[in-house]
Length: 403
Image 1 (cartoon, one colour):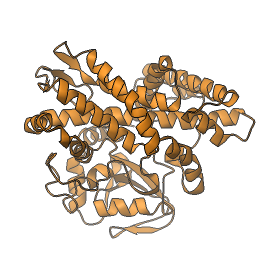
Image 2 (cartoon, rainbow, N blue to C red):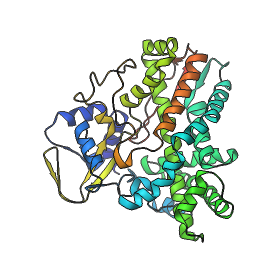
Image 3 (cartoon, rainbow, N blue to C red):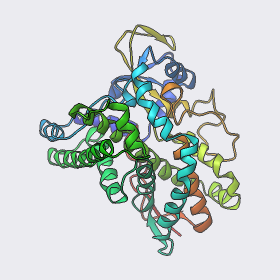
Image 4 (cartoon, helix red, strand yellow):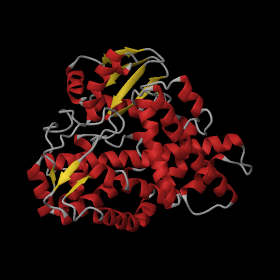
């Protein structure tokens, strides 16, 4: 990507909401060269795309913003994965890949893991509660979700930090411009994570357990575990783990940020903790972590009056839909007292996020801990907050807090 185009994309990613507003006001769809796609930013149009998976394929949903260098790709070639996953497949294959994840993240299984999640949330807050200040992303937000999804998958706690680190590095490698040396280092971290996951694939095939790793392995094998099966299973586990911790990490960061930027809302939440579920929904709507995914037309279609040929890319902006005034009153206001409304922060339709409830529960536990134990939380005046420039895991770079 050339530097000028990258700078424009960087600006769009740091604050996409003015771009969404212009796109909603325009007639038809707006072509955004930096995204290399048509921008779909109205709630009704986003829902139409998501209702028509046969016409709008998910094959390009994880297309990188940055193509790694040949040297970094060579490093990746020594790892595992690279196969289609639940986010990038359609039809029967998508349903087959999604089935074990839906089972593993059922309401009953989420409820079963909540005592562990509550214990970890309290223990993490214990590590800084007496310090008077904390950088919340590294001390808490990047740790709780990894511990929880690792528990569901069946990872040994000693392996979770490397897997979480590898997930973050995979995102950097594919969505941020890095110098070649840093690309190679990131690729090495990704491969290290993949090798850990491959070990679990081989172990669970030989000795099945009651965990998601075992279910994923069973879903791609027919008795024998071939090298191709290992690549498939690692691909699915990597995608699941990244979705399971990066998204929730970002959601925790953006929620705490906006509550503290709107001081009266934070104080209301501390005084009336029964509002926490509504605050979770408002935070998810107001600044959606998953700003959107790409889709690819499979046939000529007309959307919002714009004719699109087959093979045309659209960017389906959940974040734009969640600020649509035709759907949400006062959409640009952060207000935890508003009546709950159906937003698109976790997607919709056949590709709706199967881990939405798990993410909500971890955010609920987080707000319960912080409002009860640290009601005096404030943003540190000496550390201005900047948002990570990304459309898929939008969050603060760092979140320095004091009390």
